[in-house]
Every structure is written in C-alpha cells, then in structure tokens.
Length: 308
View 1 (cartoon, rainbow, N blue to C red):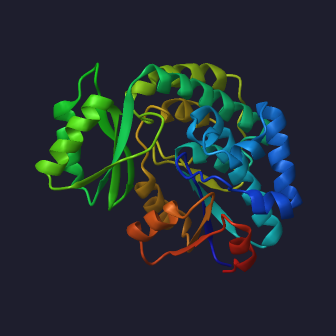
View 2: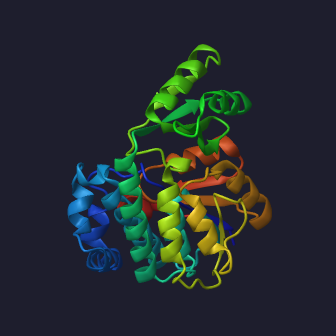
C-alpha cells in the first residue's frame, strides 16, 4: 500500500468561504465544526464566511484547526484504506495533526488552540511586528543580514524555513523593513511583505510561549497512531516531549523543509496529501523533492476525485 504523509496547513492558508461545501454535504465535517463552535464559544461557520474574522488570530486559529480535523475525518470516511504513516503540520497545523494522530483528544486540542490564539492575539496587539517572504534565498546571507540588524528591542530573524525557494523573516516592523531593503539591494533577493497579524515564531511571542506553557502543564498527551514530526526540533512528537515543544514552538523558527526531507527518509513516504485550505504546502513539497507524490483535498470536489 502507498505510504501516505498528511500535511496540515498553518495560519495564512485561510480563505473566505472555506468549508461550506463540506459543511453542506458531509455530516461528519458538520458535526466536527458544530462541536468546535460549542467548545470555542463562537460560530465557526460565520467565521469561515467572514474575511474580517479570518484576519484575526483569535478566530482564525480555532477555525483552521477545526476545518483541518473535519477534512481529515471526511477523508478517512471517503478513503478508509488510506495508509497514513506520518504527518507534518506547519505551525498551527501541528495541533490538528496531533488530534488526528490521537495524541490529543479533539476537545482538549480545540481548547488549547483557543488559548494559544488568545495569547498570540494579545502579543500581536502589543508589538508592531510584521513578516516578509524571501524568494530564492541565500539562506546564510539572510541569516547574516538579520543578525546584523537585529537588537533585543527590535529583533528580526528567519521565522520559517519553508523550502529551498522560500524562507520567511519576521520581527519588529522597522527591523523587518531594514532587513528587506538590505536583502533586495545587497542580496538581490525578492522580498514580499506578508499580510499577517504579527511576527509569529520570533522572540516577540515570548509572553505567549510562557502563558501557553502554564496551560500545557495540565494537558496529558497519548502515544501517536502515526508519526508527527515537530517543526521546531525536527524530531517526532512523543507524549513526553509534546508539551515542552509546543510551548517553544510559538517563538521558535519552523523547519518545514527539513521535516519533509526527514519524513520521506524515515517513514518512506510516497505521497503527501494536504489537509487544509489551498495547496501551499504541496507546492513547498514539490520544491523540496519532485519525486514524491502530492495531492490536496481542501474542497469536496477534490476529495471526491481523490485516489492513489
């Protein structure tokens, strides 16, 4: 059987109208979203259709987590013989990945994501911060320029190592602007400002990390049904290390590219299936390894056509 790895989208993948086709036609998806709405205290179906709500971290993180887990459950029903041996979630996507692998139960996972979103929204509001994608990067030069510009008060650093063709820098607004200009002028690299709430995966989210750590102390994790690779440490999550890694994750860089390479090698993944809105992660996989298969099931039409 084809060995499948699942990819769970992070914040930024959301699009207005996402999930409507699943909600209207797939009962298990609708049940998942309704349950998540009760847990989170707001109507996720309203959030799915609201471009304004989808811009706010406190809403979009629970919405994406519930959407991704709902799609996962729908996929399991549609393809019951699917041989899932591993999963990678990009940032927030690690939460639905951990729920899907049964390391976290759904209610606990949604409550955790809601707290994470609340804490991160407050850090977003506290700091003037931003992020920018660097395309076809010279990674060493990007790291060097960020280090030259960064200060304790106005940090800038690589926040996401996404693929050989993209890294993302993040930090204080002024520092990101300076780094972007220097990368364009000296490094001749194309830099694109991202439309995000704040500079996730940078030291500016230290307060979120500390507060989330307190919440995680009360959470019990279970052994996974399939391997989930940590973006932060590039090692599999275990019930022993999950809480500590998730605490650091919000202020530490993500290493999606390295996780994909490691999972292809260690789990012998033959095809990655993207769970979540869009095809961003599938495109990253193509940039990382053209030999591995790719599929996405973010719409009902695509799921109905899905086959390996």
